[in-house]
Image (tube, rainbow, N blue to C red; front, side):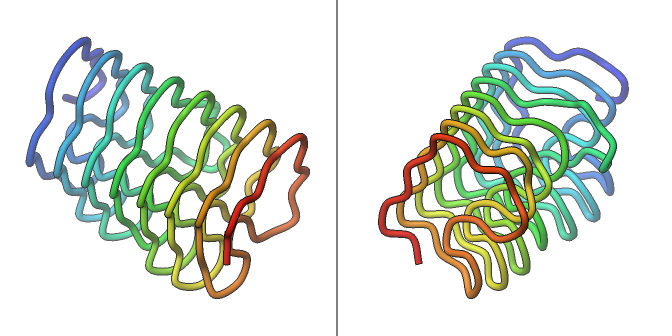
Length: 173
């Protein structure tokens, strides 16, 4: 889908250079599974997601599930991200994540779950980055989040200059 709105849809095993399933669009109540982007945004490139699930999506560069540009106000709200992969931002890069769950996402460089993405009321469990930020790399602010068993070479849970408020950290390494 290009420049569209998807509601209660399933996207499985789609491929594109930018946004394996959606580019410049919005998803509500959708499920994204095993979509691949040759460059950015395994499932969504430049878009919003609400009440959606992302599982095993992959970007060969940034944003395993969602990629937004650095000055974006795009968001993910009430979403679940499981086992997504990218070089940076295993689940998402740039934008805002609110009330989301991130489990087992991986980055071969920085930000196992998030890279440069604001996060509020999110849970991060078992995310991994080979270099920096097992759960989060250089994202600001981080509020009311829980980090459990995330890992990276530098910053098991978070790496980078960030403002952290009211968060809980358990067994990160």
